[in-house]
Image (tube, rainbow over all chains, first blue to last red; front, top):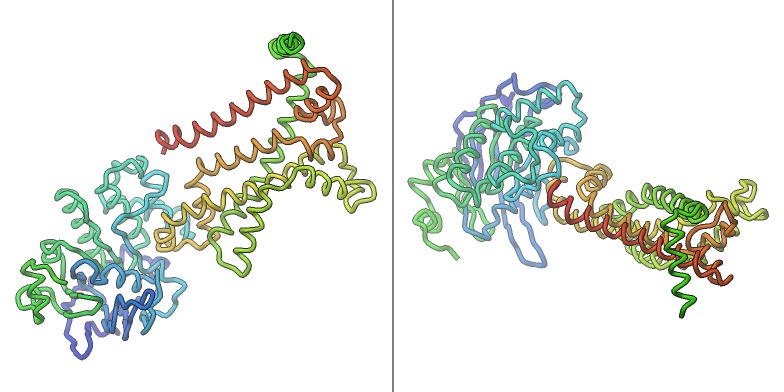
Length: 273
Length: 234
């Protein structure tokens, strides 16, 4: 599926090969759900974002290629969530270009999804919440039931399917949000600090679900504050500080030999300003 | 003072004995207001949602216009509908003047701006919470309006009940358009005005008490739906 796409990730002049972890499970993706040759790579060229003259992101040049989990790290205010929102298409960059391999922008919501730090649960059951994007995309009823069931099972939500989503715990709601985002089997899933404010067992449940999505062929691009989580989940790391990409590369390189002083300080747990 | 006490006693008797004339007037009132508000809600709720979510030239002017129309004088609405429905008016051939249908049209026009303006605010507040999530899931504005309609059903029901409160209590437009014809277009408010001017305070008081009971019931319903149902049914 991605044979025509060079699996490399670039940051300015630096480029490196990604591990070839793009495992596409054809059984989980029908042509209707994910046609064509895929939307990756996603290229950001000289992307910047300003609000009221204040530059929040500057000179972002990165390419997200298929396969592997990409974790965006950085202190508060570094621009991690903003970067994900730009990539997801919720906001437009002030400068630069964001382009997907597949230029059919109108169809992106079928191919890429996002889970927010505080997901909004619709006032309906868990199953109806997860079914909502299927209805939006006019998936036929029979197929809808099948995809709903698959998402419920993958997220371990079968016992909660009939419960009202708004009365679930934070961890359970985040699992519903994950299943809802993944139900259309997107090629790319953006996760904005999906385990913030969750206890260790809920965090573990979320991580397991994310890894299942990855195994099913979904490219995960996530932000986190939790260095332990980043070590467990990342194949590649993008390190942001003050709205700029300071480092990007394979996770093991970043965690063992960070190239920048800021990266070293961040890994030591020092406060960056 | 004794006359007033006697009027209260007679009014209580009329209500407790379920007086036929009284029930008939209440029935016409409820019929006109329920249909008027029901039709207005069908138009005004999507309109309020569209104004809240869509961005188009003249949107702010429309918002100001809707807000201004919230205070639309019922007699003016009555006059306009009267002119439209009168024999020489553009809709005269429909023969709706001095009918319940004509009164429904008048109340519908009166309440639509109120429901649209209040629901716009509800939609805008909901949109702050839901905008990113719904856009992320791929909901276009037209679909988002209907999703928010479902999500904010309790708050929007309160808005509709506010519209009902205005409709059931107004006298100007139904008096002009309906003509206060006994056993046909006489409503509680028009009957109160008439009976008071005639000096039949008992029936006027009985109708006034009933009107207050209905208004209280509507307010209680609004409270229950918004606070109690929202808390327990979610």
